[in-house]
Image (cartoon, rainbow, N blue to C red):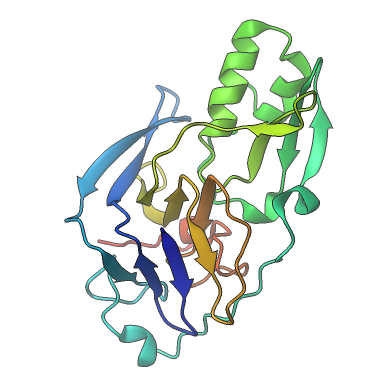
Length: 225
């Protein structure tokens, strides 16, 4: 089973033979986040340790720097299920937008075409609905979720069980560790966070919402290369 174990003030220990590859934000002509492109694919390993302090000389893998640079990896994020953290915005018909803003990883797929918070009001238009579902589904952190009120469940994109290392050329920085397809995340004290289709974990070491990304990598221009 795919699992990421968060070690105390140390790396993410990945088990279960999870594929690892760069995932690059592709933009439209105006610089808006549009789609994902897969970059470098790493050699398959049954298990590996990913740096989370931001200081490894062997990124994305841990080289023990956390033990020398005083990294504080204390987990401060809420342990409540996503639906209890999120606010809801109703659209016409059965569609709603859920938003847990503390999980924002600053990938900006929410912005094009007038922003998803405005689009939800007009999702009775098929073109607007299609853009809305695509943009919300591309949010790597799962901050944003399209919710089917009649079915009582999320409308989620199909994602393979894998880990992406986000690269953001427009912001000229490296982004978080993107867990895809439902990977178990176990805290350093043994707590299992809610398993979700889309989750982003901090890899710059500076998030105030550890273990999750809060977008700090963009303001500090974190570079993994």
